[in-house]
Length: 413
Image (cartoon, rainbow, N blue to C red; front, top):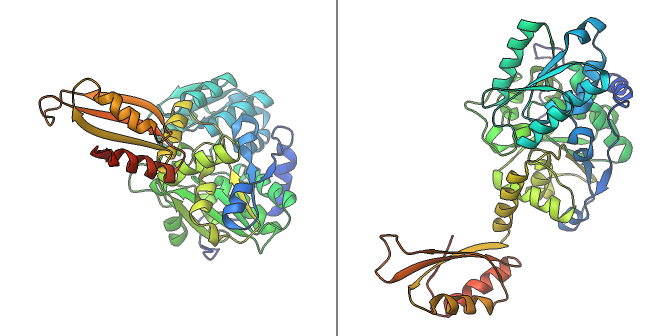
């Protein structure tokens, strides 16, 4: 985007020295996460691609970096009052774990839609959890009210200098682990990670490219960068990627990132699901939807990014129920699942004949259902839905052709 600097109402300066100082602080709590080659992406694109595995960070995401830096700099009086945060899950866990490391009482407001594993992990780290509203913005409003009542210190998920500088340590690690890096893809919601990584990477490697990646259903940065201020969504965020489902980016992150980010890439829900599935299957890494959007963007636009490419996997905290749905959806998109619907006479042997025909294609039957009471069916007619697991698009086509050649009228659902 590379908007001109100097037109923002907040100080936009986060220096490389600020980030290096924060990196020294956070070393007491956060891990230096690995940078792994993504061989399957290299084969697809013909260029070097690496994964910065922040999904392997303590608490399962990058959030502990900024939270620890922010809280480590509180005075003794501030620490005595405790801290409060608002989060859909990753910031909650980062704050809870950092507070435990520093011996500070933490209260976290989370939306009622927060995943159960993230909720449980936050409590296990010792924080008091309050459920409120449906979105992170609702939780932020509740946290602000709590500050007014108690005097606790708000640990904002992205809109604070210490948070941005703390997250920037991830960018320094990228440059240290891959000195020749040419492109960095960063998941972006509120923008704290993006701003920190962009400041670090551009400060150390001015010629490198930084790309922000957002879900199409929570796309705030292009307009914010264009207007030189944080612009909220017209409605609530709509995406499975709850970690970046933010209705309004932070003022400071927008001010820092706008002059540094080369472009913003939007990814669809289908692309996010595909990214989760491919990263799990090919890289053997469990990454949550928000954390995998960089992979999704690379798969969709692989020729846009100069190599070597570093893709930030920002978190791995995913609800198993959501993961199951994502995997099934991703397999269907990849042609690995297909549900066929067949109407036939409801008489003995009909189902066996259909299944025999299907078996000839060496396909796995996952599920079968019968429907006899639909008014659209003729008397004596049954509708059978068969869920099949195939070996890919070519096998899927073979299965459908073979069943239809047996005289069956097949609808694909």
